[in-house]
Image (cartoon, rainbow, N blue to C red; front, side, top):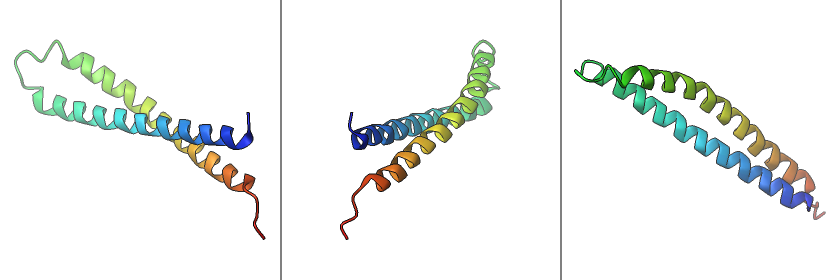
Length: 88
């Protein structure tokens, strides 16, 4: 595989990981806010413990995904700059 093609794939993978992680983090914030507003509902006792565990498990995983995705994205972008030929 060509180096430029590998760097392009690296950038795309980092971008996708970052976007999916940000979406998961936003979804968890929305679910947590729903938990805050719905915890006084009568039948919420069965769903809320599960929701709280999911939220507090996914948030660190999403944060780690954001960090890894951004590192891949930026590293691919920087290395792609080094592989371009200098016109002068």
